[in-house]
Length: 168
Image 1 (tube, rainbow, N blue to C red):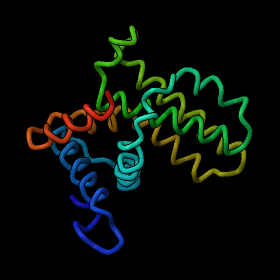
Image 2: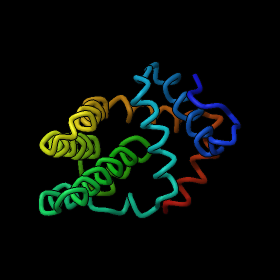
Image 3: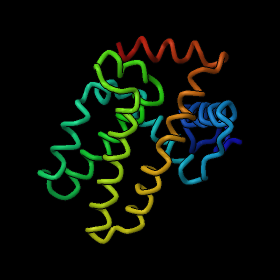
């Protein structure tokens, strides 16, 4: 199911590509993400798959440093930590062994970061955004599974090989 048209003046070809990628992952994993979470995942991929610095952040430091950052700075720190954890959990779970941590480490860090972000948003009266990140935290396992399934598709293997080469 495409959520965006393949070509319009308002949708980049990147968004269309990542929409197809998420669709492929959902299909292979037999998971249907809620519409809002699916859009989040497509936009998340568009934002972060060209950001090679995100996966080199130490996840625990992002989580631990966020309470010391005020306002939106702390929120951004938590979101980037959650985003990096999701990227690693979904596309590169084998990196956990390189870091001598459990394969579940990335998921738990992502859930903690998104849940902490949700709590900060609720505390500052941004309840709608807070509820959204609560849902992202709860559904992180599904998001991870969709990304992992998408990476395993034969027709997307070349895409991921190029992507992996960019990050190494």
